[in-house]
Image (cartoon, rainbow, N blue to C red; front, side, top):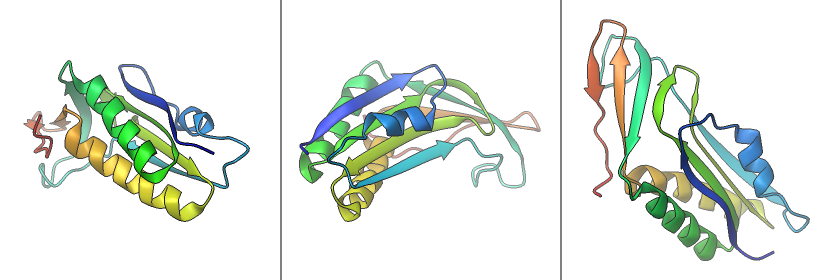
Length: 146
């Protein structure tokens, strides 16, 4: 099957999870695991307040970090990888991030996809500001150190 990165992208356009998933399909694939991160209407950083939208921004180096993380996951697990993260203003229900991993067996796909999304969130320099119905705006704590 071989490992490969089919998509590693930061974009300001809508993400269609099915398109990300389709990229990792191949005849040698027996398992595909996908993760879709959506904008929700609440957050623990705004207790009791409804979240109305999010604004994602990124460092100019974010695409390189995304490519590096995807490549390392593909190599480590011997899997096919595709991932995209949005920047810009997103409404509740919009797709913020989509990741797909495929492999010959399900265990590798599950493990690789979990590590992929965790590493994207912790290593790719993307920041989130959320807006509340009462007019509040809060930069959400992040774990990315870049």
